[in-house]
Image (cartoon, rainbow, N blue to C red; front, side, top):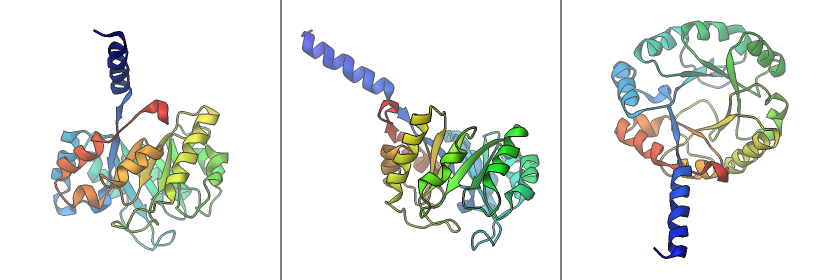
Length: 241
């Protein structure tokens, strides 16, 4: 084999090996609750990394969703990791109930009116995995004081509260900046992106630095297994992140 062609062949093999399939987290808010267990089983079969459970209290956001009993029903339906996205004014008051119900990772908003630093410190002391979420209009620098010890940054690519909104392209720069903050500090934090995610916007989020795609109406509004498969096929090179 020509030496230059051999080098190209080796380079292509290396690039292929470095490609990583995207992690996908279906957002249960858009599932058919009358057929919840079957839909979760479909998600399980195609291989999802977690389930995203949106908890809304009608105060922090203008919607009300589910409580701990619903989380228990999801937990009985799957062994896959559950993330509790607490879009509520008092996550410090209710998080233990969600942990008891089966949540593995508590995600609170940096915009919540409580002392975010104190709450995250409390979660760390109790050995509870946790992350922090940030809304589209909030500067990414707001989360910088809270990075140590968290497992995930959840970047909202829509305004929280309702499923089915269009992806906000301006958040792509925020994702990239968050990735830079992680690398500069040497943290092992994963970036999740939530809102308007489909097979096209997912590619944009991945290129910006996303590790996990949270998707609601795209997944549950069509062929569940096929659409999760499309999101998982989105690839990125860790070295480029």
